[in-house]
Length: 65
Image (cartoon, rainbow, N blue to C red; front, top):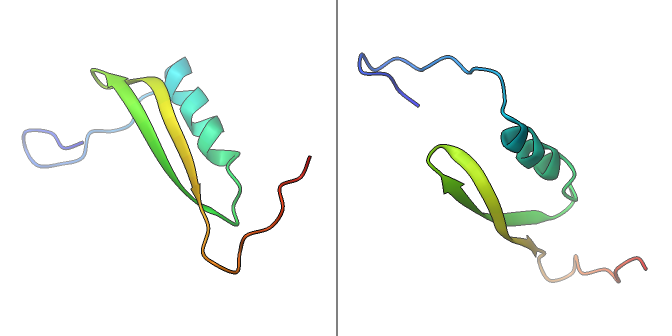
């Protein structure tokens, strides 16, 4: 985010919801690409509506049970 003078606003401490969102992102399978649909309430992440895993042809592997 930018401030009025065009500079970047320093990051403050994470809220519990921001921390939970980052934990989810950090735990995604690194061998796949993902699309995440997040609903925000103001600047606060409020709900993760959808997580889609994308794979290219030839990368499809059976899911582990």
